[in-house]
Length: 174
Ligand SMILES: [Zn+2]
Image (tube, rainbow, N blue to C red):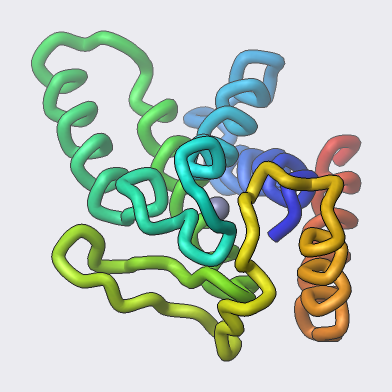
């Protein structure tokens, strides 16, 4: 999923939570900033990986990390009342949407759902490692352009990205 979609989808998720439970989830600059931060947090591993096709093989894209952080945060907050609980729910919702989106849109690197216990990758579409055989930060390379040409050839993915972008923009004003 493209970076912009992750950012816009985070606002969409926040608005969905807000409409589902207005008294629990506020919409303000603080909750928007947290949403964006939580939604892009897994992609920190871009800076730690040599190749795009395996950049998610870290604890940053492992569901287990988010479950542990959520449970630890929940327990700490239950005992010491550190912050409002909606922050934790927002955290787990944004992380879950990020990981599910990555499974849907994975083209060269899937999600290692059971990492670190298993290195099996999960993805909706067949993975083609060849297209992700370059450093993830080399965004001015021909390999990068080749990856995106391959990515956007898939009309379902193109539709999904457009849907998330439009939903995100609408939710900015809704
Ligand atoms: Zn990701």
